[in-house]
Image (cartoon, rainbow, N blue to C red; front, top):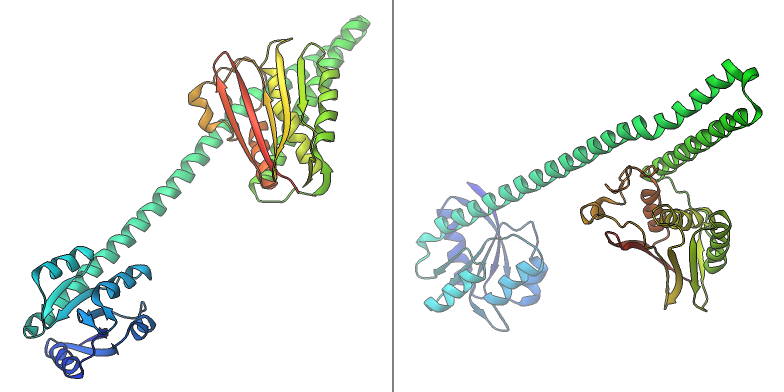
Length: 372
């Protein structure tokens, strides 16, 4: 005999015995929990139940609400309606709501078949759900592997171009100094030394970016939060950029407000400098670069907008991925790491970053950070 755990919503003891007898006759070994009220029914409702057999109307409760309670509890339990008197309209409505079957109490000979069919339908549903879940996990794994392969490919391209170029320049200048030092005029020696210094500085910057991104990807916290004034940090960075890039027209608009937040000064500086340096790199000289800082209730908003070359629309969705660069920046130096670091650093602070861009019109980055 097949073990069967039944929750029966029934207030007539004779009908309970009749239904149990019919289940045994059909080859089941039923364990029956009888509920006569809503409270008893809801208390017994659980995933340990194999099937629910319910009368249509009980004092203070009915099969419609009993069936709805199964959905509300996120349970997949077969539900069979058993009633003494049942109109076809009511039966059809219950089937539409999810009942597996319906029977009249004076025609219980079909109960065993109805129960077997309902259990088989649930088994098929469960198997299908498992197959879908496995398929979704496999697809997610394939997506992760595809993303990793793409990232490895971009890393190879990065190493081929961004690392090879400065190394080639460094080696060429070092070789010239080693072979022709005595014959080179002083200004040429200085020129080669500047090339070596510039190349090594660029390599060191790229390596530091890669190490930072690696630690962020591994979930290693780089946060050492302190309470600080974001406006003071922003104004200091703007002064530094104006001094370094005197031909750039950086316009700073900081609205009067309290800009205190708990954040990591190093990461916040890196966020601001990365976004501002991109605006400088991709903008013509003397074109305005607008930096604004404002506060809206519990949020601080930093916005940097340029009038530069813009970003192609197809590049925007992947802009914050490592080693990703816009397709129209191939002739402009860059690593494709800065914005990936910016995004993760912003999210470490509980914030968000967004970008808007129009080709030939410019780009605007907006960083939202929680204030205190």
